Structure formats: structure tokens, C-alpha cells
Length: 287
Ligand SMILES: NC(=O)c1ccc[n+]([C@@H]2O[C@H](COP(=O)([O-])OP(=O)(O)OC[C@H]3O[C@@H](n4cnc5c(N)ncnc54)[C@H](OP(=O)(O)O)[C@@H]3O)[C@@H](O)[C@H]2O)c1
Image (cartoon, rainbow, N blue to C red; front, side):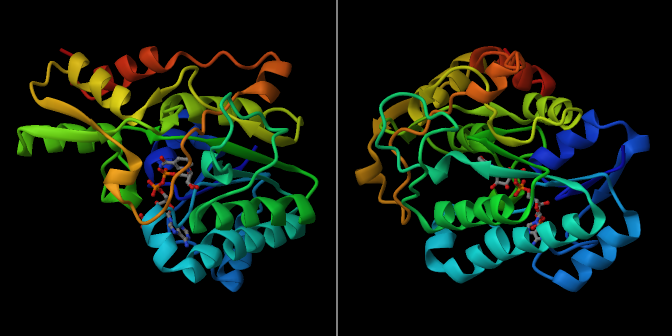
């Protein structure tokens, strides 16, 4: 199988490159293909004729999406529609990355793939629009929603820092770190996500999937685990989303349930605690 990987140098893209055998992989960065440019998308993808396209590319600085929602729609919706058109012409499978932010966070139990999305941010709206183009245009697709990604490359959209690296940086620079305790998420290790994506691509069980490490925590609890496991001495205090005053109102609860994977007998992702230890070991940060 030939797999075109878009966003190959991003956080998830980097781990997908580790997992997908080199003989199958066509790694593409924004220099090779900008998904907002339909001509380029078709030219590049028609040249390589991949059996599958994985799209990790997104405009996903959540607060910036509020300020520039037209750019969010251009990348996260029209860009995805462009990929659908190329996938149709090539008869390629499209596997697209989406987000827990398609939910508004009003539920108190984990969201399954059957829950109705109702995003409360410009980012979430644009990502849901991307998903909807795929469902409207394609039969052979996987929409994979995940949450709070951490990988050794770091999130390119956040200047190369993921949440863990940001916490460790703040702890080096400040005596006290304040972290939001009223947003509950299911953080996910990109290496685990990458392995599951590759496994899913070997099947023809097309559809929508939640893929997260098993477990949940608030951002505060996540920071606490990071500081404990790295033996970082810093004062950690709770704050609230209201006090933090981010531009985008993130979901208060966006834990994802891997129901569709479970139905296929494929939900063997490690727990969040195991994944965090694995990540810290990989970065040589475990104390
Ligand atoms: N990070 C999270 O916590 C999180 C949580 C849930 C879901 N997701 C979703 O997971 C996916 C991957 O996230 P990530 O953390 O790996 O992101 P990332 O590190 O920011 O990587 C995204 C990659 O896409 C590239 N890209 C951006 N705009 C592009 C465009 N118009 N055309 C082609 N490539 C473009 C970026 O290149 P440049 O760096 O050169 O711009 C980067 O290499 C995204 O779809 C995101 O919505 C992320």
C-alpha cells in the first residue's frame, strides 16, 4: 500500500513516519503540498497515486481560529474538501484527523462516535465542516478524532511545544504554575495514535473513530502527573477556564470513548499513565 502522509513533519506526522514502513510512505510537508491549493493537491496526489492519504494538516491554534475564522475554514474545511476531490479522482482512501472540540463539552460521560457534534469554537466548527465534506463526498474514509496530543516532535502549531513541554518550560522559568482544573480531556500519545491509525488503515472498516489513550484528567491533573514523574519542583496551582480568559471557550468535558474501535476488538491502547511514562522515557525525562 502506498500512503501519502500530509503534515509529515508535524507532531503526529513525525510518529506516523516511524510507524509506516518506508517502502509504503510518501511523506509530504507543506512545502510539497498546501491543502488549500486545489491545483497543487491534485497535481501532487495524481502524480503519486497513493492508495491512502493521511491528512494531519490543520490550522489548529484554537484562539487564533476565533480571530481568523475564514483561515480556519480555508484550511480545515475547504482544504479537506480539496483532498476529497483528489481522493475521488485517485480512488484513494482518505484518513483524516479531527478533534474532541467538535463537541461542546456539556456531556458528563465520555463522548462516543454516535454523539451529535455541536462545536462551541471557530476551530471546532471548521473541523466539523471538514468532517462533513468527507461524509458528503466519500465512501472510503476514516475520520479519526483524538484529543490533547503529545509526541516527541512537539506540536508545530504551538511553536514546537506540546502541553508537557510547555509545563516543563514554565516550571523552569517561574516559581509558580497555574493550570486550568475545570476542563477534562483524554490526552493521547501520538506514537500510540500513529500505530492505531496504521492498523486501522489495513482494514476496510470505514467510518468515524475516536482514538485516545484510555483515561481522563483535567489539564491541572495532567500537569501534576508530569511534575511528579519528572521530579520537577514547582508550585502548581489550580485555576479555572473563566479566570484563564482564553479567547476560545473550550469544552469543559471532551473525553472521547473509543467505542467503534472496541466494537472491532481494536481498543488496546495503553492507559494515559502508561503512555505518559512511555513518552517521558522516550524523551529521557523520567526521574
Ligand atoms: N495537537 C493536539 O492537541 C490535537 C488534538 C486533537 C486533534 N488534533 C488534530 O490532529 C492533527 C495533527 O495535530 P499535530 O499536533 O500533529 O499538529 P502539528 O504539529 O501542528 O502538525 C500539523 C502539520 O500540518 C502542516 N500544515 C499546516 N497547514 C497546512 C496546509 N495548509 N497544507 C499542508 N500542510 C499544512 C504543518 O506544517 P507547518 O508547521 O509548516 O505549518 C504541520 O507539519 C490536526 O489535524 C489537529 O486538528 C490535534
